[in-house]
Image 1 (cartoon, rainbow, N blue to C red):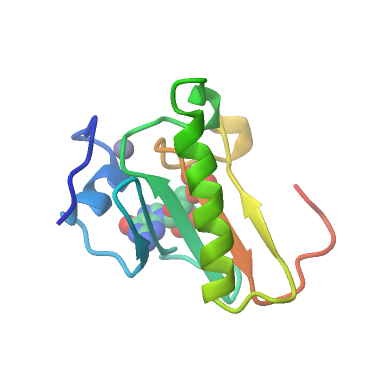
Image 2: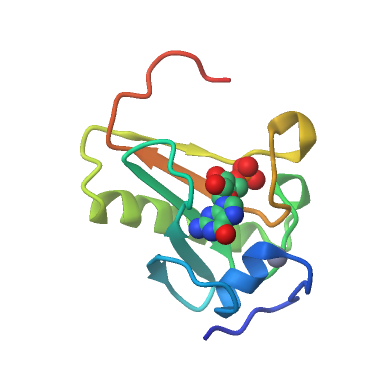
Length: 120
Ligand code: 5GP
Ligand code: ZN
């Protein structure tokens, strides 16, 4: 389906981007892919991932910062597309203490209900 730069054989999200594992696509361009979380934590729960394998926010550098900035423009576009006019939350978990379970950089977009209250 899609070309994955720097594809990791054992990475779930690389497989999803490539189309080897099915997903509910929300948005795609040449640099990133967005799909619905299989276990949604809010009425809208979308994951946005770069098509190149980056492990997490801890691997964001000057070399890939433009890609990350692009992903944030896509986050705003998806939030609009999903009708999240009341606001939403963008989350990226990093490492074991951050609760990251899939080691491919991803941004959760959560919305469709009030998320005020506890952050972590
Ligand atoms: P993390 O815990 O790493 O921040 O987020 C990983 C997310 O990926 C979780 O919210 C989990 O529900 C989601 N997820 C795990 N496996 C799959 C899958 O096969 N398909 C989809 N669409 N989401 C998945
Ligand atoms: Zn990957």
